[in-house]
Image (cartoon, rainbow, N blue to C red; front, top):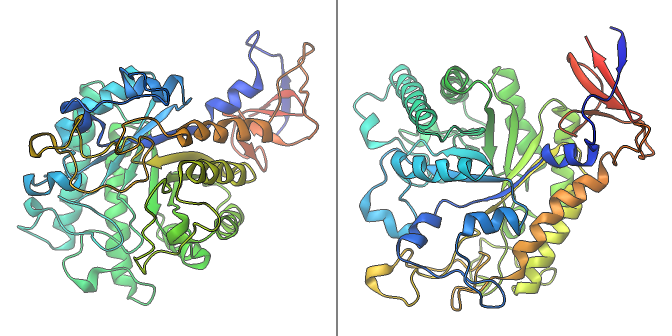
Length: 425
């Protein structure tokens, strides 16, 4: 179809600003209200009190999106392990995120407790009937009910993760339901039917929200592409590939680059978001044999944490298919409260990967490196228009109006190429 050059319709709009608006930068802040509930102090690097951590992350750290997990019925016995995010809890935090003018990424765990590659267990209230059709219905009804409630209460998600780290499936009744590479097609179909049930509910309630399918296999390029091949073969309805990337589990940046390049080649229509990443600023667990000791590249120090983030952002800038970066648990801040006690304990263990020192409650500088993701992406994209409406950039690449580079003007819409607006009818 014919491309028509359009006049520039918004005076003063820069393509660099459009590019920035096309990318999401933030963190999973699911524990922030818990820390706030016991008056945990958050200080900046100079010791000044931060009155609103969410606003600080937006204004000082340039974050524009936040992720929150949701459990079906989190048990009180697991509260001190971070399992507290009920629908009411998420509604309140989600509304704060939206009221702050940020995007909201909702992370359905579809379990009463942690859902990850080792744990994908059926919520207790869904166990009355666990045949596939009944579980599909429970999944669909629950997803729809939650989204309707959030929309009605000013917490409409912009992104929806239908499952958390679902590399091996979800809603396991037993080991036979785990989606390993060598299991039957029926086992995989059971899983993809679940995903399509969840997607159906998202499309019905929040049709503008982007659906993310999230796995943690960035360290294995073949396994990652095989997984999304299965999603494609099953015609699973989703928009974005979501990855976890922790270098001590998933390999160095060269390995991440390999995976991202393969995804760009095989799934050119699917943007990628790194929905979880983090690094240690203290006490790297080198005693744990499940970890690769990465301190030779990035020491477990505040400076090492910051360098990891800078290096990661620089790598992601090389990959046009990457549109989002979220840090996991940036709000970590000790056990909770100004001093530890049983009455104000938020968590009973420290992970030492957050952006506030667990002892002093002061800001680690690493969080300020997060904005490198936006600036690096902007520098790699289209530069601002000159006065005559032409791009000052030197390439002839094609971009959509979110500032994302695309291979061709495939879908109807407005694009930018060579500094000019073009309409694909």
